[in-house]
Image (tube, rainbow, N blue to C red; front, side):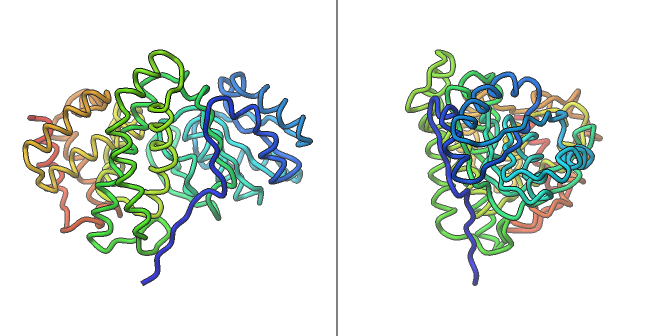
Length: 357
């Protein structure tokens, strides 16, 4: 039995750490491009540029178009051309960061992620989820390794809207249930190997950290100043969650995104909110007892996570909508990492029970 554990080479988190990014970059290379959309470039571009310049790193801004598609990746690679930088830095949310991973892969550059939101665990991982122009999931690509650096400035993160942090909570919350199912069913992790016990330990710590620090972190967000609870929640959403899913493996919660992302309205929902709803489906399939489900629903309400398809963005939870979600989700590879075979009928029945609760 072979186990594989993957992780970024370096993870830096704290208030104001963006101002020292130049020192971090200088340890990796001498030239870099900064990939970001217009809003993020205006938010952090000057700070990154000043810090890079002070450390002797030449920085070139590279505008991101806003959606992670194969066409956008090809455009950015072409724009870089023959002047390959030592480093590709992606700043922003998951779309920008995932795009940067594949641009770095295709140009042979090192990769650095600078999340400006904590809505998912993309910043630490080596995989990129590709969508089409309508935001339907169309593929998954891999960088050759995890990022060389993940730099998380919590002074920046705390300024993002609460629904983005809520999505990060959703993405982190599901991991322990998925890792346990993946290991229990003998499934492979993202690296195609068995899951190490370290990943299970991280998944469990991630869940506990999210549950214990939610209220304090949300209060800190409302006040606009990072606190230990906020720092802990961000670490869980970005670092623990990312390490847990890649090395631990995924299951039903993430498998559900195949179907959910194909439904108008839901397709525009944040990834963390989609997988949170997917967790409700997984827990129904696991036949959890009513007390457990009610405790989880109470946490969903406190965390501002969706409890119904309508809250997720669907116009209605019609039979056709449920059928579409169930059929597409049942075909997802992650669905096989479960303690029994799951059919579209099983999924549809679980969704209907959730909607009736």
